[in-house]
Image 1 (cartoon, rainbow, N blue to C red):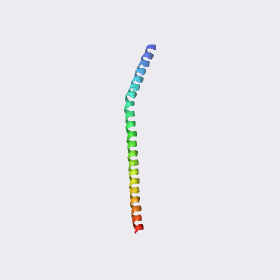
Image 2: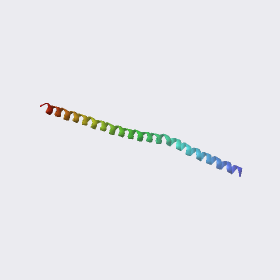
Image 3: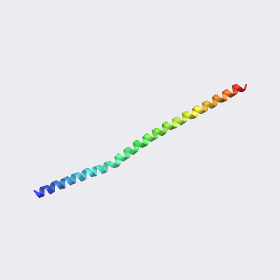
Image 4: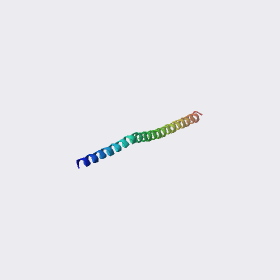
Length: 76
């Protein structure tokens, strides 16, 4: 009976170790996937931010043109 318990414990230990090893093999992939997703979200946010800045610059240029035209008409 003691021998049977030892065998069961050994099998359980081997099973547990194999599951832990599988988990350790999967961790780098999970980590890499998470890093890629974060990078993709950051890139998307940066692209939106850059687009917002571009729109602001376009509005500033448009405002300068309007101010210039208004000053030209005012000086006539």
